[in-house]
Image (cartoon, rainbow, N blue to C red; front, side, top):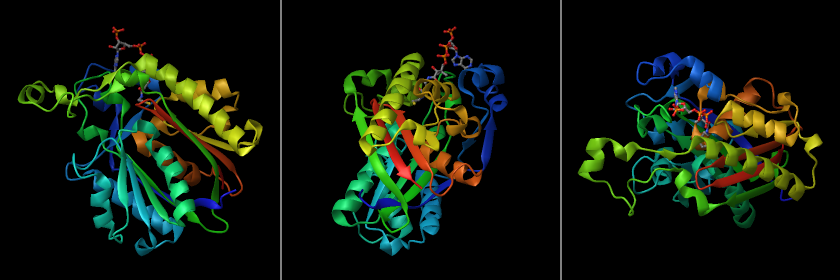
Length: 327
Ligand SMILES: CC(C)(COP(=O)(O)OP(=O)(O)OC[C@H]1O[C@@H](n2cnc3c(N)ncnc32)[C@H](O)[C@@H]1OP(=O)(O)O)[C@@H](O)C(=O)NCCC(=O)NCCS
């Protein structure tokens, strides 16, 4: 056991609620289609004046307050996001300044898709262990700003939000017992945003056609891979920590789609009440989804002291990651 744990966590969601009916004003869709395929009913949309750093800041402050840790005690900052503040430098640089952190290492896990927060947690745990550091981890996404509002295949799936956690060594903290992570880069094209990199730089034509906002995405393939990888990495993290599935009190899966969550629940042979979901109200918030679900689980009384909690996430890359935590 490393003795490294979650000292505190918090989240932030913008106040604007967008319903499925609201989406039907923009694209040819319906509440019936979205609900039956995804389980999503509402999602939050950032205000025009908000940017990624605003969301991240609120979640970070909530996590710091929950942990009872001051900004000057933070030794490192990791931000997981696919919707950064600007193209360069990374969002972590903006957030380091905004929070008034010391001149500590601060960096993004960019492009890690919806697995970003759990990957960052794994990294933070290692850094906390090797450097005796207190690490602030943030998962933040503002997909509403960077998606195509006329593409019904993708726009209805996402929502904005941020979640954060403070990782470090403290007696009595929620100990991170084990983490596992993996990547299969052979299928990058199934879920990607191609424009803006060296392969396909921004151009006047891409901007005018709106193609720069396009997300290439094969929903059915992503669905199958998500179920397979989240199931396998959940089993792997339990094995690594020497625990049984029957000992797990609460599973916090990535919130992409209720049917994916139900399929993971089934393939692991779990009781549905063990598996937390808030995708109905927040949609897919990318790398913010796991910490947002953790905060909601605590607020609605599903997370108790002593609980063995399994987090599992999957996203573009494909990347996946799981963590086992004793709260
Ligand atoms: C996207 C997803 C909800 C689609 O569900 P599905 O059951 O696979 O959908 P189907 O393939 O049966 O249906 C697709 C049809 O619905 C249509 N459709 C897509 N979006 C729609 C919408 N918002 N409203 C109405 N119809 C829609 C498509 O045009 C297509 O029509 P067609 O058959 O006439 O071509 C599902 O595949 C999914 O959740 N995938 C993974 C999500 C994901 O990638 N998350 C991000 C990474 S974790």
